[in-house]
Image (tube, rainbow, N blue to C red; front, side, top):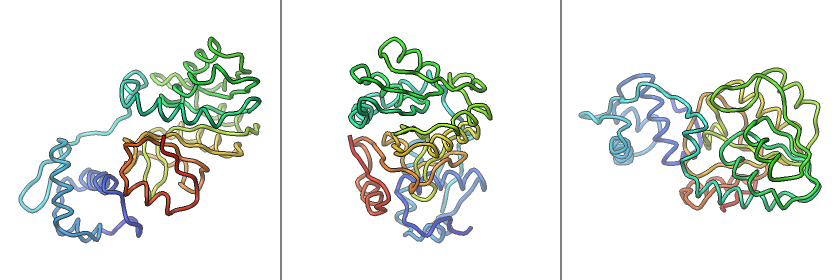
Length: 262
């Protein structure tokens, strides 16, 4: 095995990579993990103990084996019940960045849904979005000019993706985009399980003057299937107070964007 990054990793990110390695090899030894991450055996043993306590692997003599069979994305109904207070705090913070008269894009996601609930007092907004549920909420709660992007419906996630969505978005210019992410990694940036969703997010970023990422602290140190943005692609990252202090400090040291803790 060879290390995948020269940068120091978040503790949670290192654990995430251990699980990824276990999916590839099914069994890992402490010495090879020490070499891979350039950390002490005690650090690796602590990681393995934590992951075993979370029922994500089984420790063996000198190493670990995987208990995970597959990786999947929760649909929107199941996502909604997780970390809701943190999402609301992030949304309230993000809403302060939206000014009367702005033209914005709202990405699909549970945190952007919470942001949409904060916009009833804003005036003269133009909101571009690809999420049917968010569009319905905004129609009832605001007088904003709503532009709903067409495309292929992603079942279970009430949003549109595909070439039609990408093509329409690519013709636009907006003041701000508010994005969500399934996972945040110091090395790999922002990732999502669905390739088509990633292409839509990339296009949203390209057409916005300011890129604002909304990610609750549970997303940090994790990886998903495909990258849609590097850390250097965004202007602001809003998260909650649950973020690991070491992770927050590492992000601040990058100096390529503003880290805001709601």
